[in-house]
Image (cartoon, rainbow, N blue to C red; front, side, top):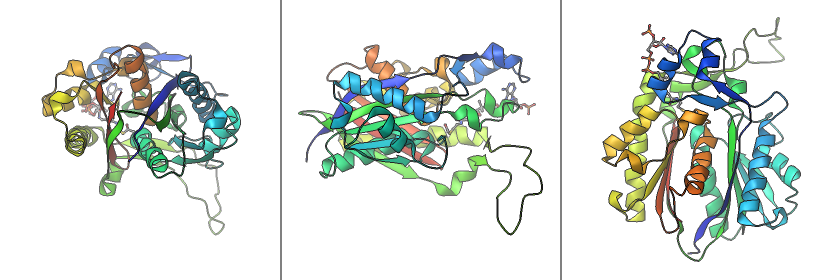
Length: 326
Ligand code: ACO
């Protein structure tokens, strides 16, 4: 079977930073609480005229530049997001227009924080089966628009950003194993609540006083996150016929530094093998792992020839992992 790998990586982060000290002025919280409970120091927030599709298109352009491939050589665009500009058109179609990828087909996937890895595996399958030759896989979130900025339980955790990669045939290495799993019965642990449904038979009397917002059962989610990520690593390594000691670097979803430490402990893998950048960006949902992968590569934490595990979990609940040889 053809080997499919990452040909280039790119990110885009809004310039505006929201620090823990800024949040102290908005809700009853403290820098100390946020740092000690999550490891987060600051996060990026998109401006009002910066849409998810703008973040996605910028990350895509940067990934194409890194891969030295022009947009018209791309025949598939998959965008992972849970915070699109609107229900339709898809973010992938908007990116296609923005970058001029006139030969590409395009669609979105929704798998929350696992979205980038679900999109990666989907695009890889398209290329492996001959339906596409080169794909752009993008994860972009403007999650600030889904947050209740008066709810200290959630508003301190999230940030906006985007990451992208170009996928295509490689001579050696590439994505050597994939794992995806869903636990729909635990979906209520993390969800977006839309206060009022609309129907022509039940006209809305007043505008809802609350926009859709994120609701989360943090402690339960914490346990599921640790167990499902550790399990996904074990399963994907088995598929790749590799041992834990063969792995040079793990790039996990960045939801909470304590979750990452607990996964390292459960797997008996030294924390220094795990890439962490949650301090700078918070949880960017699908975009977290794409941005972390980019930064791990650029900072030489991932070098040529390294075997890397990408692992994530997210609302759904869903978890995923991939083994990539660089
Ligand atoms: N500042 C100060 N106090 C706070 C804050 C805050 N921002 N938020 C909550 N508290 C309070 C609580 O009200 C509670 O007070 P009480 O004891 O008087 O009731 C106290 O702090 C302790 O709250 P806990 O929920 O016990 O805190 P915990 O140590 O569990 O940390 C956290 C909370 C950080 C949310 C943790 O549970 C967590 O990270 N869970 C996983 C969350 C996650 O990963 N979400 C995303 C997953 S899916 C995806 O990525 C899309």
